[in-house]
Length: 93
Image 1 (cartoon, rainbow, N blue to C red):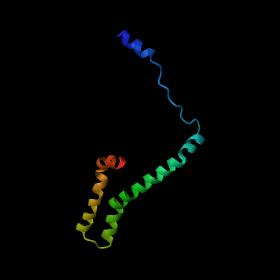
Image 2: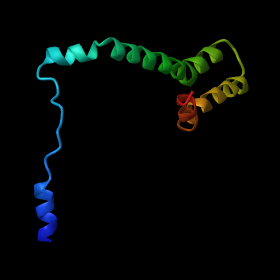
Image 3: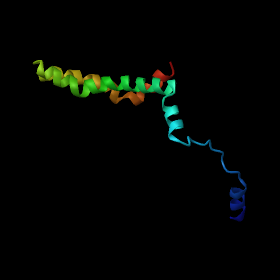
Image 4: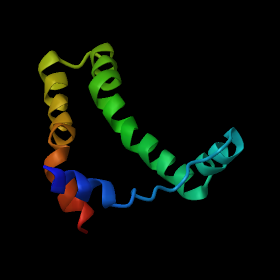
């Protein structure tokens, strides 16, 4: 047991980079062009989910489309439901 604690105490502490020290450095990090680009990509990837899950079914019902046809459009949501399966395949491309 003493051997284990002596090994733990002899290991140097892991080096960590220091984070931003004030709000200006934080804002500078969030306004970096790469971060802003990823923000827009994430926003544009979320719009189809919103349209399919909420708005589209409402619009179709108001347009007089039958309930079975509206239900058929919900099949488009399956792609998002199984994203964890196909996303790694897309990432390798």
